[in-house]
Image (cartoon, rainbow, N blue to C red; front, side, top):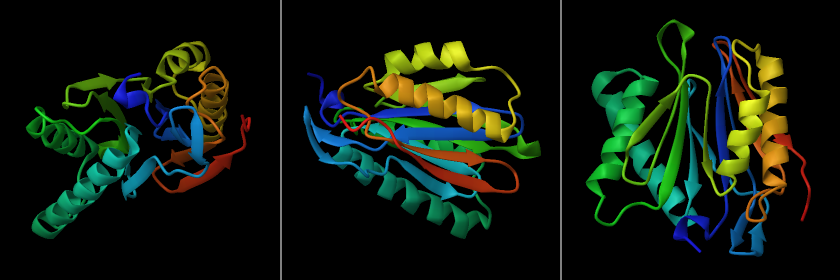
Length: 204
């Protein structure tokens, strides 16, 4: 078993019309043993940028704390919030500088840029970015997430339809992966509001 699969995870981000959604499962396990059912994988950096971290749970929490620290320094120096593209470059640089003993995480970054244009990207554990215009996935359920998102996604969805689509994709995917699941956590972000919802899923 790969160290990335040790705790199990599923993270997905999807783009809509001037909005985006980011969702994750809630299970924290040690291989096949479930430890917690309310683990937080998605974190808010500021009102328009969110990050979901899949991979080893200890590194997820360590990396998140470093990112918050670096963003606060940026806010103090620049007196503004980071753009999603800038934040993605920061995450990539932090991961790459530790490339010989990497953080065992695969981040998914989603945000609203200038003119409320949604931005999503993912990267591997040493910071190689992969940009997309529709959806990005990471975690142990990523193969089934690719299939579900490929089938369900359509461009320019409104916020409510986007929520339905990402929720159905997440729930149907984690049911096909025994290391992730136990419900879901979904954020839908528009220029005016952030909606956070908890999904109930299969408890096995």
